[in-house]
Length: 440
Image (cartoon, rainbow, N blue to C red; front, side, top):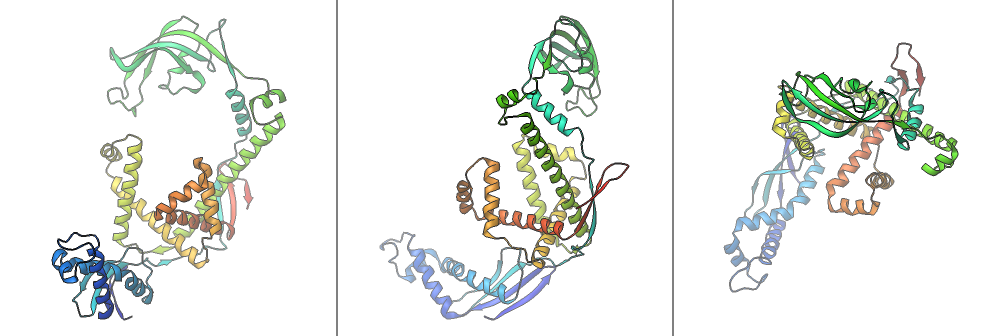
């Protein structure tokens, strides 16, 4: 098939092609017959009206439009293939000449994928910074397990300390006026894990049951209530109860009764395995991000404004939906972000586009493909995360092709990142003064 390719600007191209008269006429007649199947024409049963009657009833232009919709998928696809275009948008018909008995000329526009000039992405020596390993993580996790199964006992013979749980009544005033929502009866507070105003929990330490006293605090400057930001306040307190947490004794019997494990050693082994897995995941994510940033920084791509504008619109929609789920007003959120919000949105859009183009380029150069087994594994992982059967997800995906495309892109992203880790030398450096390195 003959077609004429015209480069308009940037990554925007126009293609004009011809559809032979014979095929156009056949499509026109088929379109007229199809339309007659679902329109009511007086004096005729559906699908039985002659073409001339259908033309008078619905108009020739409508039939031509239907005929084009039949013809275009084949011819558009062939024109794109013949001209070896890597398109990233749906083709848009900009002009056509359709006269019965003549060849049909069609012109459409497409945007092609911008060319990425990749920097080095293999055989690099990459230093990856990781946080210093938390030596207390195991003890904290074990203590957390015991805390989950702890009991509370009343304290009657001493004042409260910083690890107690206290039950109290309070009434807060600011500038002599009651604070809205600043009073409660029988409120329970864990003094070791308080989310109250700074200084509040500390002043509940050292008091006995039935003590009545005042607490003086200052609301933070970033407090959500404008009237209270940076303001001093007084809370009248009556201490009703003091409790302390009693941890169970760590024995095989207790572990068997309170978990799926039979012994203390099995529990400890599971905690260690989990923490090791988490630590390896931190290292992997940091490595992926660092290596990819190195590749991105050394790569160049000219991104057309049209792509940036579409990505900004997509990001804006994502943010609006996310904030809506959280009950946050969009306009108030934008106002709170200040003058740089639009600039940051544009920068985020450019970063996302560039990253996506780089991943696509590497996947092509490295011949990374999505196999059926990749889909099955991804769906299995998603089903496990959502607590549903894989078949349920497959059914939903089949009803929405966009889901399949999205999963395919996720798989490509993961495989490219794995490829970068496997084909570069990683040296991990802990974040501390006396650096300790670990080669991958």
